[in-house]
Length: 445
Ligand code: ASP
Image (tube, rainbow, N blue to C red; front, side, top):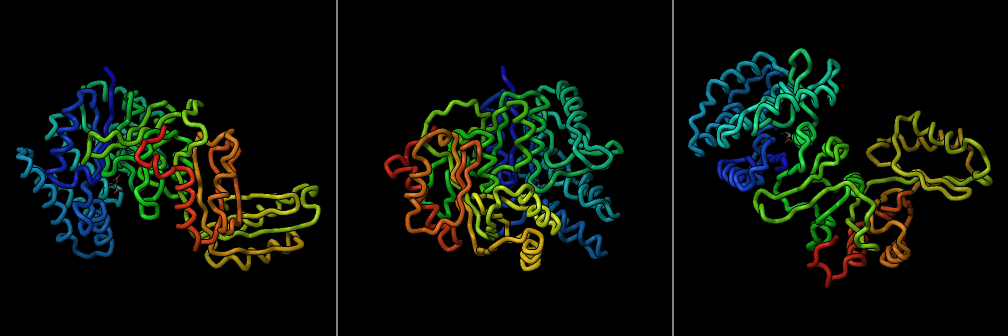
């Protein structure tokens, strides 16, 4: 019998009724042995996330302001869940101890981690699973860097003692017992680490959507769900802003070749999206997997006669950019031209100085700056080595001014730079070109 690790996000564990759904999901499949909870999320759009409130408590303590009122909201949230689930578990003494520790200046990481810790205690009691504190099995080193090797060893050994367990997400501890969290949304990472630690057959990531969509539904009307996607494709789409899963959650399971299934707690029968290692089998040549994009880039285009035969020209250009502490996104080049695409968030009023320095160091014949650029990535393993893909894409963009084209060497993505104002229209046209309306109801791959 295989092992599944199931991580449930904040919206899946926001209230007693959600805990009931989670219990039904766990009960439906005995291979779901290890469960990673987030802290309670929002119950509706005006609600608060417990983690946000915990950070707020910490901030108030730092400013020597009272935080009892906010902590009261947190306590009430957990106590109501326990009461509505009919649990005998009494969290009051723990809540009192945690409040006292926060009052005495506990770290932001410790304070925030209590959201997952307390939800884990409740979930373990409700499922009748063992509770394994993440501080005992997820290890960071003295410098606060995640220690994959030590964690792997301890997790494997510790969890082997329990046939079923709940391990809170988001945090672990340093060798001296200091609680440390991952970055926000980090329970996804904890789930991936546990999946790797127990050598799971599948890492299920339960959330409130039925998987990844092929395009942003705020732009494209009713886009299809992606049934299967490779880690590589996901990385390309996530870079362009398509997010459901914390990016760092991919590495632990990718290395161990454990697939991830994004599932919906509110619709558990929907297949969701399966993220797999790409095995080179292209099931649908010519098809795309998804489209994602972002606005807010600047292109600096440089021209210099005989640039292509001048050794070190690109290095000079890049070192100017580096000296300004700027990281760039893309660098498409022609024979005597080179362009650098930079996110506006990186430029922060440094553009004029940067351009002046490029002029001084690189002595170009011409330098032009294009503002308000959006990038759109069209991604799919099915695009690789398939003739006609670029033609289809650019036919779809007829009449839209394409400022930049960049095709990754793996041929699984084509990125185009267009003006911000054309962004939504371009997304819709690309989607329509690759996913004809009559196919919209058919799932891909
Ligand atoms: N509760 C944490 C956060 O809000 C971690 C998580 O939910 O994954 O960032």
